[in-house]
Amino acid sequence: MPQPSVTEAAMRSFSQASDPRLGQVMALLVKHLHAFVAESRLTKEEWLRGLEFLTQSAAITDTERNEFSLLSDILGISSMVDVVSQPEGGTASSVLGPFHNHDSVLRPNGVDLSGDQPGQKTWLHGRVLDGQGRPIAHAEIDFWQNADNGLYPAQDPAQDPQNLRCKIRCDADGSYNLLTLRPHPYTVPTDGPVGALLAASGRNVWRPAHFHVIVSAPGYVGLVTELFPADSAYLDNDTVFGVRDGLIVPLQPSHNPKVAARFGIPTPFLEVNFDFHLVPQA
Ligand code: BEZ
Ligand code: FE
Image 1 (cartoon, helix red, strand yellow):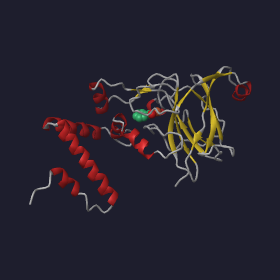
Image 2 (spheres, rainbow, N blue to C red):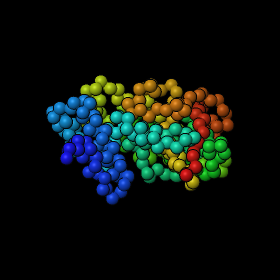
Image 3 (tube, helix red, strand yellow):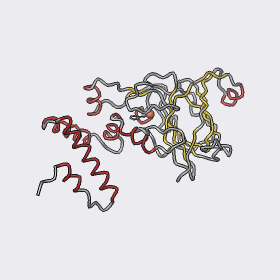
Image 4 (tube, protein in one colour):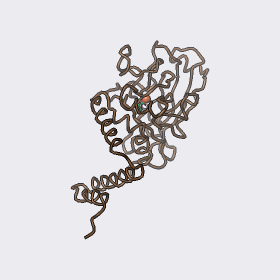
């Protein structure tokens, strides 16, 4: 009897998986990894170097820092998973990143997150709508970004852990607004094996400036996305491939006296007007 190829045998070894989806995913993973080994004619030394890289990644991964998640990001895998799982018809999704916290405090719609810290005041507002442009009442927005020094609270002990993040509940007409600051480009963590790989590959380590937003409402597919100021550096060279058409927003100078008075800020301030579109759950 002819022997099956290594690839066929390894794929078939997953055919009895108790979860058929697990069997399918593992067989396809084996198929494509074997094709990669064959096409690149990977040497034993190179494979051992790859295993060493994974071992080093494991050694610095803990509950605060996940080097595998970063590896997924810089290989574009996180973004590909976004792309293939994106439902038709809504706002594009983008990467979650490592700086999301589940314990952001629910603040009133219209909150001022900027306080008296340095940075350019930016009024972010808009509505949460369905695919037909109808408002979704009381959707929840989970928002976070970096401070004027380019750092998130997790990277900067001088910041309050809740700085520049919050949850807010939209009004009945789907509207939301908050006062924040212009976000800034920053580098992904470069002190681990992924940073060494980026350096050895001559790759950019910067992400463009962005606001992170998660929008959720009962009956709709949750949206994890980012908004990118149109004048940011690195829009065309995001090291985690998160920039999508439709998520690049102008930060426009505004002289709106009512908004300035409400927040007690001088004009001009910066304004971003963005509507999020959610897709109903199947
Ligand atoms: C971020 O957006 O914060 C981020 C995303 C992926 C990797 C590192 C940082
Ligand atoms: Fe980020």
